Length: 165
Image (cartoon, rainbow, N blue to C red; front, side):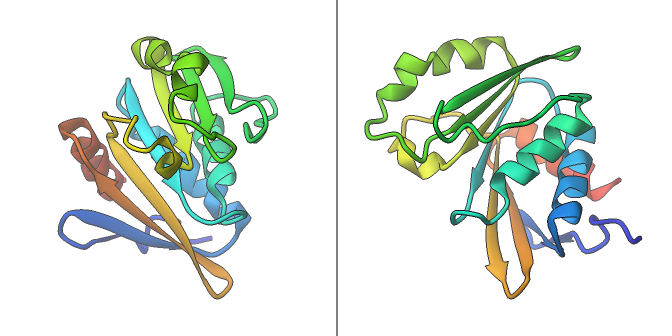
C-alpha cells in the first residue's frame, strides 16, 4: 500500500493531500501524530461525516491511545490521558454560545494539554485565538481532500516535518 503522504503537496503556505477512504484517513492521522510538537492546537473543519473524528482517532492511535475514541459531539469534550500527556478532543458542533468554551475549561485545557483537537472551530466565533494547525477536509467524489494550514511557528515546523516523513 502506498503511503498516504506520497500525494502531499506544498502549495506555498499550505499542504494538501487526497485521502482515499476511512482506512487511509486513520493512517494519515497516525502520520500527523508522528510529527506533533507538544502544546499544539489543531482545528478540524469540514461538513458532517467528512472524516474529522476519524482523523482525530488516527492521531490519538498514533500517539499510543489504544481505547475507543468517541465523537465528542454530545459531550463537547473528550479528554484522553496518554503517556505523553493530556489530549483534549473538542467538538463545537452543538455549541450555541462561544462562552460555553469557558465552562468546558478550554483555557485550562490549553495550559495542561499535550494536544488540543477542535472540531467545528468556526462555531467558536473567534474565541480560539491560538490555532497552530488548521486541517480542512472536503469531499471530492469518493475521496477526501485535506488541506493543512500553519498559523504559528510550531505549526510551520509540524508542516515541514510532515513533508519529510
